[in-house]
Length: 280
Image 1: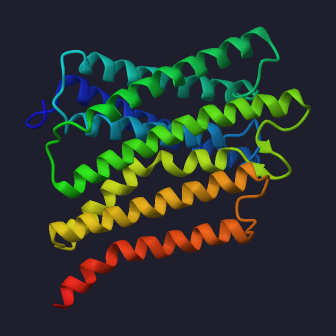
Image 2 (image 1 turned 135 degrees about the horizontal axis):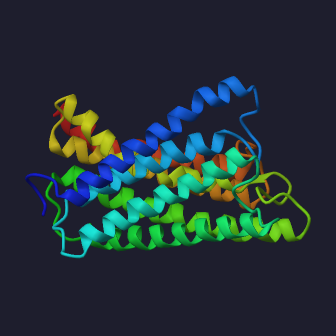
Image 3 (image 1 turned 120 degrees about the horizontal axis):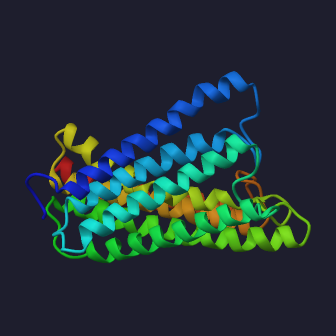
């Protein structure tokens, strides 16, 4: 199914996405009234950000599924994906309500069990994302620019998931060495590179929509999304380099500064041919 009325599974996933976003937003006033810090292992930040971020991701995956030719097994798989991430967000929120850390916390049998379930659910969700990433390289019911946005966005989402596994591994290594599970080396923030590519699947299609609203030609829309992909990829590389060099997020040094500069130049160069054509 690539067009027409969305299937029940797609509508279900959209509903789950909206509900998860709502759960994240509902925790905002709780955090404000609590007077507690935004950061920390035990913080209302987690149910807020995980609710909103996961909800947006589930809705985006539902939208991607509406653009491919759905196979018989895809509907149940999409429903399972949405349910798995709902349980994950519920468990993360539950741990905050219990007043304990939701990640890297195996201090009690209950905490260890909850964390294991969360990690299993994330692994399952990642497998589904990889599967759908392969599928989007088939026929897509959309424009060339949006095809590029979907395919690049899904690849970036896979990269974000893989970085999530990497930071989990290094987090456990750091914890075993008596350090903080969120820090690599001296000041590297492990979640920094993980978060950058996760939402390219929303950002890149949004660029296409904005270009369309500005009545840009199809070729211009394609160049805009290509430029956005270069920026996202370069900034992700910057994040990886910063973190695994033990540097803070924006603790610039020659190599990382050069990567950002080259990323900006490459992004502008992607747009340049279209500007040249427009002047002719």
